[in-house]
Length: 179
Image 1 (cartoon, rainbow, N blue to C red):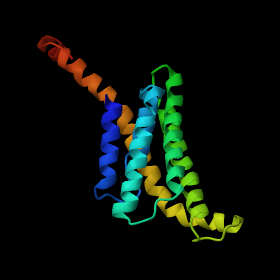
Image 2 (image 1 turned 90 degrees about the horizontal axis):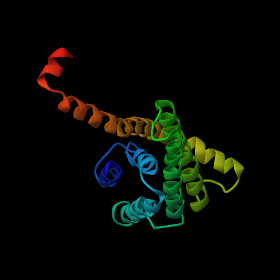
Image 3 (image 1 turned 135 degrees about the vertical axis):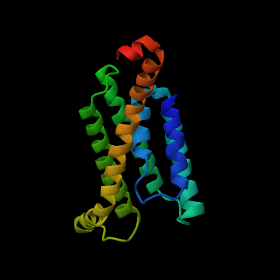
Image 4 (image 1 turned 90 degrees about the vertical axis):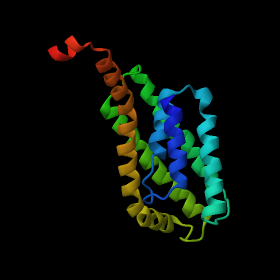
């Protein structure tokens, strides 16, 4: 249930004022991929793709182009990266979570900037232009990486926090006094 809640929060944040590139989108997708069956993967992809179209058309007044497909492919990739965390048998390790978050941030940087380079005439369509596109995007990578790490660790920590609160609530007054 938390995976769906975090997904809804990430979608809502996209439409609210926020610091550029500081959103819970990557974290929500990683968490969703780690916690949900693959049969549900179409839901976040469809929801975020629809939000991309809505933002492009109604907020940013950009044409919808093939880079929207590139974003949707990254949504799938982020959930697959999250799905790799399931191999720990449900016991998520902080290092693996941080590594998945880093992989998500880096893959978004690579895919989104390649799509920008390929879709627009902002940079020459050669290797030097691609390099210039990636260099120009470096300042946007810092908030993406920061938000992905922060939200990912928070999202994966929430179930532990809930469990600790439940466990504390189950303790009797004698148990609490002894603790």
